[in-house]
Image (cartoon, rainbow, N blue to C red):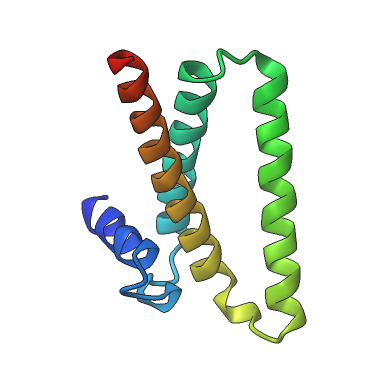
Amino acid sequence: MLPLIRTLFDIALLRKGPESVPRSGILLLMSLVLWAVAAFSFTSLIENAGGADIRRELLNFALAMTCYYAVLAGTGNGERVMQTLTTLIGCGALMALCFTATLVTIGQLA
């Protein structure tokens, strides 16, 4: 998992591109797990959310992935769907975890 996280950080910092992530269902699953941890931690720690916010987060996630898939398929890059979705999900999860950690830290300092 650590090499995936390093690669996702490099992608988020624009040092690498989504082509650096191998096409793998296991990596996509790992990114989904990372996203689920990020979404759960954000909604439980920051928003004190109930089930409605988690459902809204899942709906937004499904809509975004559908739109990305449509763009890739529409431009003829359907073979890159798995790599792109793995990268998008993973980088979004890392940013959400960093954002959550920052807000929790600032909240404890204030």
